[in-house]
Image 1: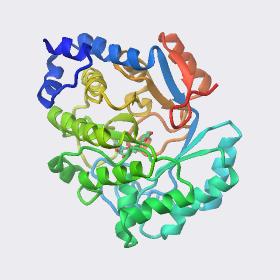
Image 2: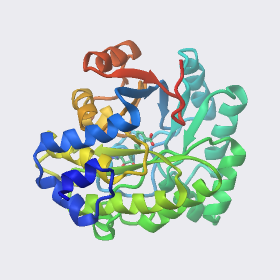
Image 3: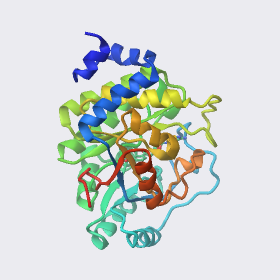
Image 4: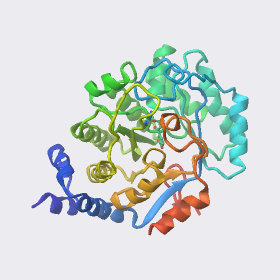
Length: 351
Ligand code: V47
């Protein structure tokens, strides 16, 4: 049986087979990934009406790829008050958002309650809003800084109203690359352990991969394999999100940006390898809207959402600072031959 036939038959691919897929013709790979996407989701492309909030950019960590942290190249430090955050939520909820996605830097000065009270205040005032908050990197930081275990922080998150966890902070699991790009941050095992514990509480999360910097193709496949292994155990990942590295204003100094061909191949391969993760998100913020639309032909069935305001990736050069208008978003999906379907944060269809 050829590798193509094996994939078409729905059989699982090995590490070596996955790596060899990079040698396949782009369009052949696209048709294989599309076949899987169609079986799972038909022509539907999901989106979510959401608001990103990044409450502080003061960070105890020093990731080389980050342009957002004020302790790196960004001179404009800020920490929002809860009142400022609630004003943002009030304003956004008037536009019928369904989710707030809250990711902060690792601020050592606010106290643990500052992080947690945000969630309780939002859930008390807007119980219908889904709070997606705290990456495993933040959880690891809070646990270490405040002398708590992962379990204690995760229990507090549940108590204060966090509904699901975003997939940030995964970067690349390979320890050598990780040491180079984000030494000192949550380890790969720590990241996976936190998500495992979250899933064991009956909760869902996402998982990202930051690619297009110093990592090799083998590093990407290794990253996907570690996700697949955990997902076999817990089934708690809703969505895989490959994040394309943005090169401005940071310390990685990558001269050659990754090509569109390599991005689409990586998307398609992830759709094939991650046979147990239901959704593949083309995050338009880092891929550009245009390439995210093309990625629908390479396995992606989710384009995230309107976002409204985005600070982390736009600091590094992405054109996402002001989100995208809902009408434009759905029209673009339709015009590319797919069916836009609004979803909630747990992938239930709305409407
Ligand atoms: O973890 C930081 C990444 C992530 C850069 O779960 C960069 O639904 C590219 O995780 N170039 C935060 N990426 C964003 C994130 C996310 C986004 C959308 C949806 C979800 C979800 C999660 O941004 C960080 C880091 O990997 N990042 N700097 C950069 N220069």
